[in-house]
Image 1 (cartoon, rainbow, N blue to C red):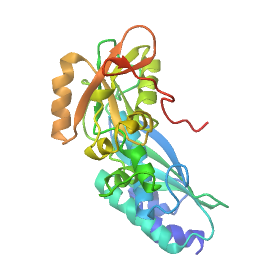
Image 2 (cartoon, rainbow, N blue to C red; image 1 turned 120 degrees about the horizontal axis):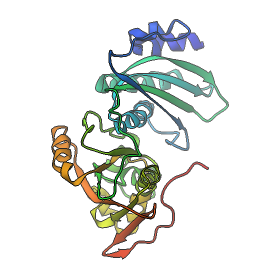
Image 3 (cartoon, rainbow, N blue to C red; image 1 turned 60 degrees about the vertical axis):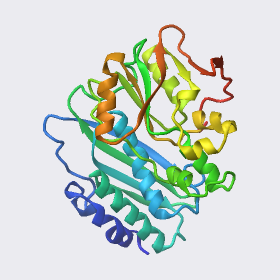
Length: 312
């Protein structure tokens, strides 16, 4: 199938007004009046971020969702995105059709439209990149550098399902109801919480909870004390057993939010999350002094071999 036919058939129908039908060299759009733009980009590579035999529908949706999670961490509203797709020449047309179907489903779910991008062939592996554009009120984007000593450390949802879901997809962990695999393939970006004025700092959990909290500490010049027993895990993650606790804390692929919240705003945080039916749990606090993440279990220090994922 010719490249232009591919774009016209599967991606032009996903374009919003600013995308000009994907028929021009660039998009033209006007940002919402009085708002600041927030831009993020993430790539997914077969064999690294998803398994080559994952359904193409879920690959498209995961691509959007991991990027939308970055917008959620900044408390930004999604607007549009650019897509770069590098696929082997022998990729069947049915794959592109299913991939576009997944994108369309999540465009509708999250109120975002395609405005452009690029398609190329590659000897492999399949590689996908999305650049997402969102908007916030001026000066209201949540940053990583605002945590203060005494702020509570809160996380949304449950932690560890994504990392365990990869093990389940690889046949290394039982997953009788498919819950863990689903969490690995389809993250849940936490949009619409409206946390400006409630949280002092925020970050999405993509590379491992402990490593990402460490990034918040580094940006804010504080340390962190975490009680591993307080970290929320799903019933399915708990069923895996205590030997997988460290995997849950460091494995990544959660795409939940970790937040620094003053004690006086804890009730506001809980109310904001309740309005969106998003569970939220306090797992520790930020502290003055050494910029380090300290983890305890049953009151004793918990040794951690590696705090999270790194590509290099």
